[in-house]
Amino acid sequence: MTQQATIVPPAYVTQSEEMYDRPIDPAIARRLFAFVGPYKWQMVLSLILMLVATGSAVVGPYLVKIAIDDGLVAGNPAALRNVVLLYLGLAILRWLFIFTRVNIMARVGQSVIYDLRKEMFERLQNLSLSFYSRYSVGRVITRVINDVENLRQFIIWAVLAIGRDLFALVGIIVAMLALDVKLSLLTFIALPVMLVVTRLYRSRARVAYRRVRAAISWVNSVLAENINGIRVVQAFSRQAYNYANYRDYTNRYHLQTLIRAAKVAASFLPAVDVLGALATAAVVYLGGTAVLPAPGAQAQVGESITAGVLVAFVLYIERFFDPIRDLSRRYDVLQSTMAGGERILTLMDTEVEVKDAEDAREMETIQGAVRFEHVSFYYSDPFAQDPSPYVDDATPLHSTLSGRGAQADLVLKDIDLDIRPGETVAFVGETGAGKTTIIKLLARFHDPTEGCVRVDGHDLRTVTQASLRRQMGIVLQDPFLFNGTVAENILFGRLGATDEDVINAAEAVGAHAFILGLKRGYHSPVEEGGALLSVGQRQLISFARALLADPRILILDEATSSVDTQTEGIIQRALARLFEGRTSFVIAHRLSTITNADRIVVIHDGKIVEQGKHEELLEKRGMYYELYKTGFQE
Image (cartoon, rainbow, N blue to C red; front, side):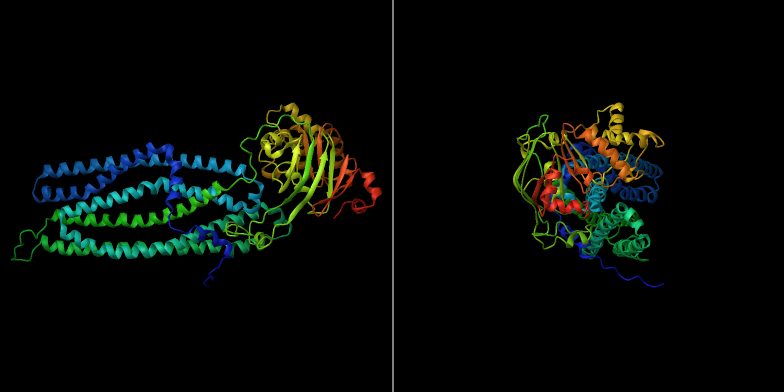
């Protein structure tokens, strides 16, 4: 069997984890434990139960000593019986307390994760679109799923376990010293060696588990990318190549990191066992000679020990190394949790770039007058100053190359437009000219770098985003449908609408006929992204969704590019009614979509180069005329 070569991952896979591989930060710990605050009394009760259970476990070997010395050796059956009954009673009590504590901590852990994921989801819903242009889906999912799950495991098992181990270690040391000081000191000789072994283990384990975390993020990212792009993968018959790449590179690196981490753990646990065995052997030999002096000799007073003490000491030695070994493992869990917690808090602290002003007011029902006042805009380059926060274990390499070291490009330059209420405006131009960016500024997905956008005279930065977007309807080139039924996706535009309203909206855009042809009609499931529907059908449903919202401002961004000519004819008739009384913005390359617009605005290189009606622009024989001759095909 040939040995697999060691895989060296790209730098972006491990760079982020190295950022988080720092000493434990008390500030991060305090913020994480703030989520436990609402459940502090359950934690206190669990702590009390843990102390009682641990104390009963520490007492166990001492009861064995009493049973041997005062029961067996002394020939006292009553004392033996009483000690055995007490030992069994403590064991039952310990089981009951541990059972109760685990149940309480499981509930606390699940509640904390519920609260944390709720806040993270709310945060993700409110983050600006620029955040999602920098962070891959796999990276975000890793934060919400893996890192949060690690935190849950730490809360349930590790938090109180650290206290339990410390309490048990102190109790065992006190009990051993009370039984015999010399044997205790003999046992403690192994501690310096144990500290050296533990330190070596921690340094190696830290590196090993950091690589495991990076590998998990990489696996999640590759999975998300392949699942989201499955149509492209199958269209280009890339299944075999992607599978081989995932098997021999991504997933195998994950396997190698897990094996290395397992080897590190496997080297530590036997070392602890060997030290424990050596200490036990020394105690048994030296203690045994004290229990059984040489024939004909008499043990000196103060130098002999009883058989019960010797047995109890052996039991204590076995338990003495358990909390030390457990604390070493808990340290790595703690560090991993702190690293994951720092990533969680980094996500939670990510600034919302487009947010409502403190004195933002609700926008009343608008008429639809839109004004762009000398608007300029550029997308800031996230890599120009500090690339490290954006290049991490889950960011595809190709997504970082184009931005690294480049300066931010000016997308729009001094856009000045005044649109009347009810006017239909079409934007045309080459790909990348800035048409969609204008629409994003109108919907306030971004704020202008210079100038301002006004609706009915209100600067959009002075009103709430929700009150603005409630009065907008947006249909994109690639419509997204949510997992649910056809009716539920149409209702997304206005949740309080009736079934009749849904049917009327579908009829208006020509979707009613094909919906009735589905197996369950309006109650037919569409699956995530509308996977069970064609692109044209998804587009018609998105039109119905926008119409049901009854917006004052309607935005169509390449909304008819994915439908056939017959379906487009149906939509054109519906749009004629849909545009009535609404301010409408249309981005399209199809001539039939924009010829009837009240105004056509030609965008080139981020600037307005022409504007007017269809016939007027043709007479000018400028850029619009050239686009018209080519049928708007680029």
